[in-house]
Length: 193
Image (cartoon, rainbow, N blue to C red; front, top):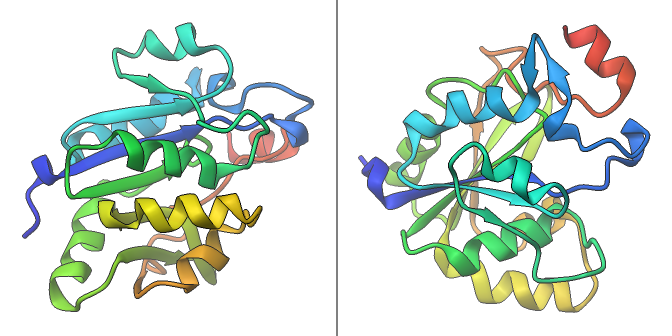
C-alpha cells in the first residue's frame, strides 16, 4: 500500500466562481460551515501534507492552518493551473487532488485510488462516479509536472483531455452515489443542503 506520507493532498479553491455570481465557492456556507471545511475534514486524514490552491482570499484560506499556494499563471487557466502549481510544490511521489466544492467525498477515496495504482502501472488513478470520469478527483504521479506545464503552455485547459494523454486507471465509485456531487451554482448549494 502506498503510505499516506507519500501523498500530498491538494484542494482546488482557485476558481473565479462565475456560476456562483463571483463568490469564492470554498468559502460559501454549507451545512453551517464553509465548503472547504468539509473537504479538509475528509481529505486530511487520508494524506500526508495538505495544500490549498487559491487565487483569492489567501489569508482566509490560511486560517485552516494549511499552506496556501496560488497559480503560477496570472490569467486563470482553470483547475489544471492549480494542479500544476501543486505538482511544482510537492516533495512526495504523489499528489491527491480534490475540488473545494465536493463536500461528500468518501472517507476511503485515497485508499481506493492508491490501491488501483498498486495493481496496475499508471500515472494516475481517477475516480469514476455519477456516470463519468471525475477528472479533478485524481491521484497523480509527481512525474507528470513537466508534461502538465507544457500542456498549459499550449493553452489547453481540459483536465480530462490532459489525463487521457497518460496511462490512467478509472476507479469505480458507483457505490457512493453522492460522492462527487459538485456545488457549482446557488441552486446546487440549496439542493445539496
